[in-house]
Image (cartoon, rainbow, N blue to C red; front, side, top):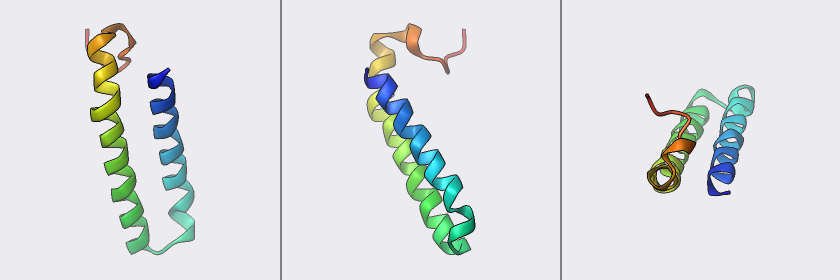
Length: 64
């Protein structure tokens, strides 16, 4: 359940970033991009890595 919500949050953040491209200045977009990148990184490190340590079979990014 944590993985599902974390991945959904990442998808929502990505959608927010892409939808902002045509609605703000270059400087504002860069700020949004940095914020989204930081938030996605935090979700990956603080939530998903915990899940994947306990359930490595769920990690769709791992190399076999």
